[in-house]
Image 1 (cartoon, rainbow, N blue to C red):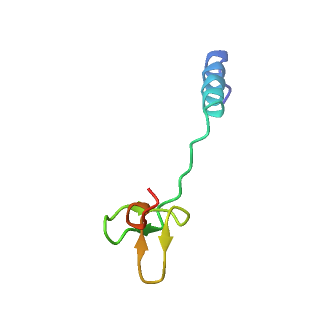
Image 2 (cartoon, rainbow, N blue to C red; image 1 turned 135 degrees about the vertical axis):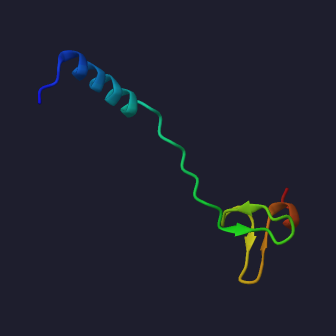
Length: 62
């Protein structure tokens, strides 16, 4: 089935709009939840041990 010129232009415009959108910033899901405040945070944001996870507020870095 052939496309009309109008259909092709609409498709082309939609394709370009999708391609030119800025990339979505990816943030991985949190890896730990603070034992005291129940804040979720990643592995590089505070202290995580085998027994407990402590956020920056509890650890005193903030």
